[in-house]
Image (cartoon, rainbow, N blue to C red):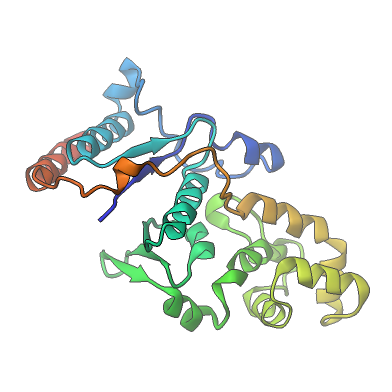
Length: 250
């Protein structure tokens, strides 16, 4: 099994924050994990970040960090390269952004807080939950927004325009751009829907630019990452990691 761990690069959010200052503005800012300052090393966050990187190295897990690039975009780029090589990919993350990558060869492992465990989330799960194709996921979130990322949905401007309406429109038109193009030339819904789509087209397209994962980050899948990983240290290393991580929270 190929395992790769991806961190945000320094200044990763700057590009998207120039588009929307609220983008991920409320998320805790992690300090650089390689060149941690003395103050960072003393803080719980700095210690946790350092311990994670050291543990991964001991477990022979490649660590990828591209300057000025978000981990999400790096993951999307690498996943595409992995699939092109004939492999299947599993993304372990609580981030809903990755749902736009789901297909037969790509699935997620996501946390289920209510059950206190992680669980696989597949193409079938997505279709069962939303009754539409994952290719529409990005378009859907451009309409309803993403509170976790600080990206407002149309419901903040048009209260009656919610998930149910968005899903109905996307099932018919397939994508956000198709929907906006249709609304520009003919009536596609009730007056408040039509008005929202024509008046706030720039809002939707801005959200698309913010939420769309890039697949063109300057990173290439390394051949040595595809080799079988030595797992001899895993059990002891992870046991020590749990003990040390608990100590950073005191």
